[in-house]
Image (cartoon, rainbow, N blue to C red; front, side, top):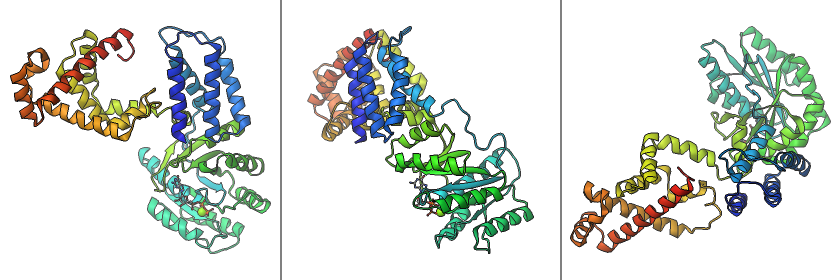
Length: 441
Ligand SMILES: Nc1nc2c(ncn2[C@@H]2O[C@H](COP(=O)(O)OP(=O)(O)OP(=O)(O)O)[C@@H](O)[C@H]2O)c(=O)[nH]1
Ligand SMILES: [Mg+2]
């Protein structure tokens, strides 16, 4: 299902080609594609329509400046808009300027409150360490509804390296008093209070949270929302805001198949900060919220950004520069070719790399074909490495006897050497064309 969003964007961009100006049809086509992506990300119609309207205003009659192409411009506008919608420019650092002294964690049953409480504790310890500040963190629970709830908090607190206190009182409000007295007596700088969840928001639950919050004066209230529940989380957030109020939200289970629609719906309805996202079951799996990552994810744009990150990590800029110079000058030798193959190898398997390249996701290439190309690359690498440097730079030297020697050295047939040389000639031609288009380098 998610591949289908990637494919529809990919085919949209290949359909529009390299236009310099935007036609009305292109804009309508894009709006349809975006609407479809939002729908599949479980964004409510109302939010989706409001977003599309703002996008329309941006695009109708837009002038594309400078060297930007129309498709690049569109990708950027959509991406920027979503990012802005998600609160891109705002500072959502829950721990700045100071780490809150009391945090109250609320949300529906199973949304991830207890896990998130421990995760927050660990992050606070890390932050204190970074600031070279002394501080002690205590966690306590007032969930008396589910029998093992308090034990669970004890276990995860231990994993997080924070202290835990079990109240002796079993009345929620008395327990709150007891916990607060304990934290004062033991000089804890931060107290995290985990609360009970219910299957649905109900009157009793809300009333209880209001009372806890009144007792814990000045507590920073965090709403934990399960990102898998989609539109439901929007209702939850709205009711919590009306009845109890909260300072920021944490969206959990972002590691699951969710497309991030919950983040979008939440921001649309409440315009409140998303302070963190939960990205796994382990204590360390709590991250800052990155609006741009969610934007690309919602659009299913093949995670182009993460490919770019990986590419910079793995390929030294210098190597790339060398190669693109060779390409620009048209002096693309077998040595450069070998280099190119190596670079691909370092980025990951061919199948993996293809997924990230805009336009490629729309092509259906069988696993068999991909594996075939991968083993071909391995063979090519072996052949090139049994050539002399001179042969690599001047492939025209390669007559029958040299080919035979090389094939023997690489453990392949002479016909394989010929396949490589054909492929190399094709590459050279392609690169000349690309060079003319000025597209990639
Ligand atoms: N994959 C994934 N699982 C998570 C994440 N956060 C929590 N979980 C899991 O979700 C389940 C419920 O988490 P809890 O922390 O017990 O949720 P809760 O809101 O305290 O639940 P109740 O106390 O029953 O209301 C557990 O199995 C967690 O491991 C997350 O970010 N990613
Ligand atoms: Mg719990």
